[in-house]
Length: 226
Image (cartoon, one colour):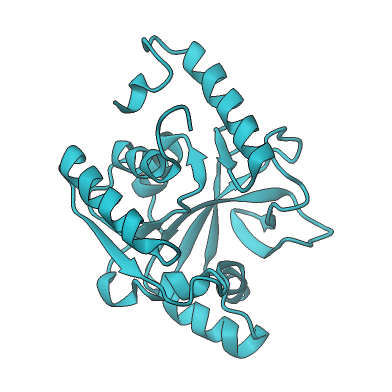
């Protein structure tokens, strides 16, 4: 993406937000990704641990569960193919969820032109709490940005989602916690983010990045991260 791999952009954004230790769960072509992350860790001067998910073709919750043994305090949970303004994660980290809860950045701009309405996960929120979440929601007032601030409660919620709904997805885990009133919504309306899932989204993301960079005083399209 403009000369910088998506996963590097995600990690650099998290570093800018204040994160200083990373666990990256991967599966497909994991050797090449691991080798790249070793070099990136050296360049950035931060620890990056690669965890292997042999079931990478299954639902995303399986990848999250791979990190369970390593995460015992609140942590950012990010998608490697999402670009986002570091200010979102920074502000979330300044207002962490209570024990046993999670916080999801929700974009309330349902006319956001960067969104693929056929693919985006929709969210219904009320009074700062998530009431429902899913790709096919008919009633919604926001979008899941893929930026979470979690407590270890997310791991048990994933297991409960498998038991209750027969699915091990992050959305299923959020529904479990939402039913208990433990899923908070962080207001991210108007802040930049995009899910880069396909060629069309890649083109939209490049265009959006160039437009954002034109508004800054940088001297090149990748200078912010180099």
